[in-house]
Length: 294
Image 1 (cartoon, helix red, strand yellow):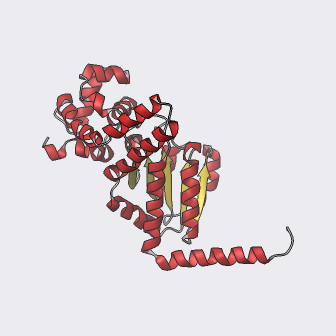
Image 2: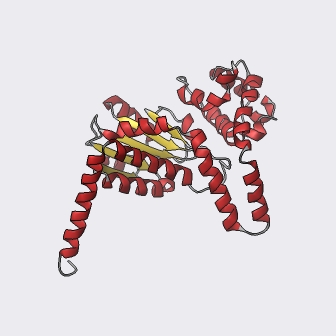
Image 3: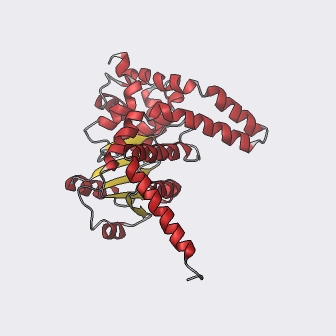
């Protein structure tokens, strides 16, 4: 595998792989993407032990993704390590801050590194593609569990202000989700959120995606690097990596991506966005003019 086809495209290789990814495969990929600086020093058996799988599973995964074998895949991991090296000083400062008891400083430094990492994991082309999928949607469904609630609330608000119809499906079980999706149409779009997949995915996620694809509904998945292992794939996957992935963390990078989607969408159709804001202002004015507390 040529250098430019190595792990600089590892996320793409995982996302575009058409075959089946087993639970063991997903566990291995999560470790590789979450701990690349350690993986480069691990043998196939040591990596397998981390994921509690057989060493042959590591070799099979490498070949599935187009590598000659595990050494080839491990060598390519160095690209991610090089990418993350720019954050090493920040992370060292963060550790120093923690040892000195400055939690606020360590949090700020960690989020600065996380936000800087967004541009290496998400391109403007992907944001433009997502905005284009949303531009002609009749209804936009936002689906996720409680961990994604702040993201869903923010994107819901921004999309409504731009004049779009939005349905929020938060923490719904399969039967309730089916009730809410009974009027799903081909011109609708579903945005699903998932972090530390598959455990954080909405209930009935696979059935939801299968039904959406069957109906021709466009889908967007937003999450951390674990979202790359999810099948069936969405029409667009926005995978946000961060240097401290796997640790307890804020969703600042994902929030930034949601805001970029909303802003790009508004810029694509400024007339609609302005009409939405004007309607909001009129409604607010009308409601404030009503006497009493009814």
